[in-house]
Image (cartoon, rainbow, N blue to C red; front, side, top):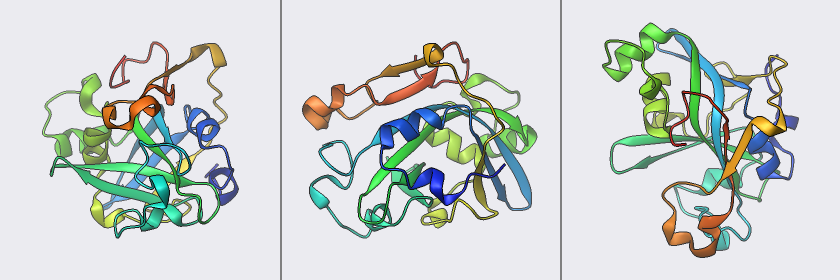
Length: 198
């Protein structure tokens, strides 16, 4: 069942980031269906989170989509190479987002291998937000994409990850965020070989 707007517009981004574990992320790009189960996420809060691009109500051409109603894609470039895929959550004006860091590939793996220029399936095929976007064909042009549409979407297949199997640890690469860098807002499925960083 495809996730609807009401899943994304809930107010607690940390809770949403946890609940996204076990959901399925799919893309239909260039005529190819690719996707798999989300196994790693990070939460970013528009209010009181120095790691968030929209901290202090920062509005730029890049962050503008963060202020939209939840259920759209926020895709931005890092290191001049990688497009990172984020899901905007909460109501209009709140600027919360969840970074999707890793999936366990399920469908379209041959296409993912071609996009990643890899001969065989290894855990790093879709482990890490930059390579995940490459494998799924997500690019900067998908900024603002409606996640209830038919290009990028998420599905609930009735899988609930038990609380004891969800690891909550600090986020990655945000040392500039001071004490907020220590918040345990990165979540991953314990024991999954597809997680980017244990």
